[in-house]
Length: 537
Ligand SMILES: Cc1cc2nc3c(=O)[nH]c(=O)nc-3n(C[C@H](O)[C@H](O)[C@H](O)COP(=O)(O)OP(=O)(O)OC[C@H]3O[C@@H](n4cnc5c(N)ncnc54)[C@H](O)[C@@H]3O)c2cc1C
Image (cartoon, rainbow, N blue to C red):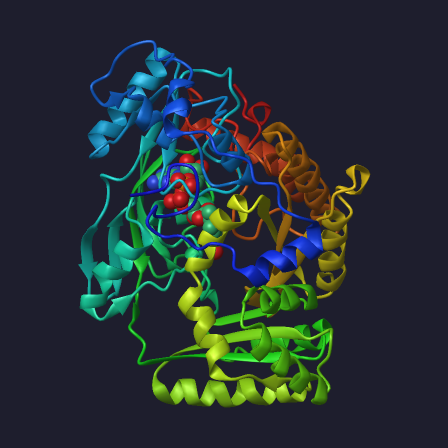
């Protein structure tokens, strides 16, 4: 059963180990756990549904409304764990086909309601929750539009219902000898339609590409009519409308079918872990691998802070201390950076690429570590999302910010974001632990993903205030440092105020015009991606 107020399956628990706990106590001070609100009391406190009319496709059942009220951002967690929702959808629909969706569009236009498409509900940037006080809202859950509808084996094209979650996508393709290869850390719950709507990037984007590279076409049902996107391998027939749907965040309509480009199942996969003496040499190695197009499926480089944190929180303290001493003897000291590289393909390719990766690491005075580092990371890569539950229970709040920029700006940007976060709560005497990695590496630059932890306060409102200060400081540092406001999580409501700095007033106006063309009555997820005033009425 899915947890109603945290991440993942209720049956899976990843508590904070003793080494991790003492590391955080040293970094931040003792955690301040507070009891969570119960499901019953949270249900009892839901505002009454303001839906003006009943509709056969819409339920107003409180548990349904609660379970679809929030995504997975830290403000979402604070609301759910404290039982103070502030806002919940007035109704929930689970449409089964395009006819149902058209009926919901008609209802929303007639009754002055808003619709919010909901895939896996894993948004971390406020896509799914408008501020309280707006029009009555129906959350449109796409779980009945799921499964593999068609597979064209000659072209490798697979058409899925947009609500198909990650594990089901791979499970459908595996017996056909194929895979998609899109593995965001939220893989367990996020859906193929959500990936397209947020322009998601999976952990092995180096081989399989971001979702943009996989998204071949599909069917969008919009309030202004259907948009059929044909799965041409390429086209010069004017601007590519698929690019408009990618990242549309539910503003233009509801994706019903998504056709993706699958890949053959690889023969082999290897994870190489290495330590580089410092971040500069780590970046040089990552850049070389991307620039030379060495056929690897993942490059992930941690800053010295993240490397120290990962090693300290992993447990196995005695064994790691011996290893640290060994690294020091080899000239890799406190500034060491962990580099993880995955190589996926046929055996000959994996062998060849592993050879080149090893040479690049050695040229950077790095040391290839034992295979167990990489294997352990791969085995735990989806489990680590569960650590958020353990951190919360131990009294710590955790969130992430992410961006991308060109190589010339990256080192300064990394410093700027970490600095903004670390000093963000100085005024109240609270410390913040922030650390970063580059995990999607391109010939011209890289993504930068920063995790930050701080102590929860006695009151949820104060925890939320701390988050607001930190998120604002990090977002400003990203914009000022020349980074994009999002490399992979999307804009939602949390990043919408920063989009203008990136795409300019003409860009905002053009997107507003497009939103109006697809959604003339303003019923689709208003306020996400574009602030309301950006859309002409
Ligand atoms: C622990 C964790 C790890 C994460 N790791 C990654 C990562 O590695 N890479 C990454 O890219 N993201 C990551 N994310 C963010 C999130 O998982 C992605 O943004 C994901 O693509 C959202 O998919 P979803 O199905 O959950 O969409 P939802 O959260 O349900 O919706 C997101 C947005 O898309 C719209 N939408 C959803 N489905 C449709 C549809 N069928 N038609 C039209 N609009 C739709 C919604 O209206 C909303 O605006 C992570 C999140 C968490 C909580």
